[in-house]
Image (cartoon, one colour):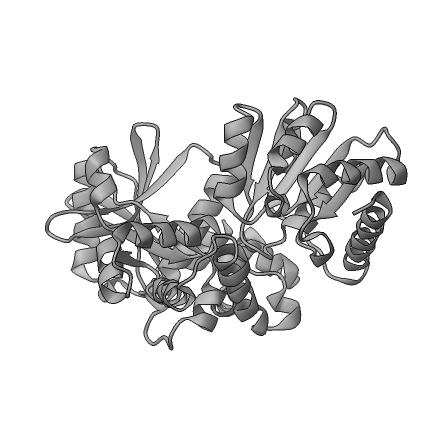
Length: 428
């Protein structure tokens, strides 16, 4: 390639972004921007990770729209095979287009380029570098090898329920939470949000974008990247995991139901899907690391819209969809506001289970159970028993039951359990 070709690509991509800003509805993500920009006061690299099409490009350029920056997206067929030596032409192109005093450089989906980390390492000494990518391992893993202590990772997720409401011009005051009419409207929006999920493009192009996004993750981000030969079996395992969201899995069981003979291959497949942000794997909580490692895991999908579009036909799965939504929201809070937060699930030898264990340092802060109920009478005894038992074992008194529409407090043997509707838990 030559610098003129690179400059044409840079300008084309900038014009595309300008068109989006001018003609499409863009909302400010509910993220602490100041915190992220502070990271770049030192010679660090800010790495914005997250699933494909969740809005990383728009978010990264919006943060620096009032600054002098250069942007290039490597997920472009014209530079699909760009070599490491040609990366310097990108820098030259920025200089010729914007001047040598350019301060910020945004490298979008740069994991597509071999040995990109050396280029980024050189740039960060004089520029503020923002890197985006849809593979957690390729970006943070390679940076950790070459830039110890010199990069900050941030994970961006699809729209939260609050962002969904903002996008649809739905605004509610604190008083509205007591209005029957307003809460009914919020719950109707929550029903729709659960169905279509939080991917921004789905609001413009419809649910077909969810299937396309899923297929791009499978084919572009995994099959091609890792050169997987057994594509049919891998695709079947991916669909099985998405279909079995909010359930326990074991690598051995996945091996037994597939044609794969090696359990390590299965583990690699699950890791690929997790690194590409299609699924999330939660560990079972244990104070003993070995027990935690060998115990079954729980699997969740990055978006309920993808579940509803890709998984086998669902019936009576509202409770599992609620649990999946809570998992993503907890991970969103961890990334945006509480990086020290650890998230697990709990299960004892009597098969009593609690959906989420929230831990900070050595202390368990909160236990959360999710259930699709609207009244006290609908609550199953095992939900309460499991919360109480886990609270005793983990020395935690902050017990929460996230419901569909029950706002109450349950007291059993002087132990309090706070019941909060999912819609309220998501927006407060």
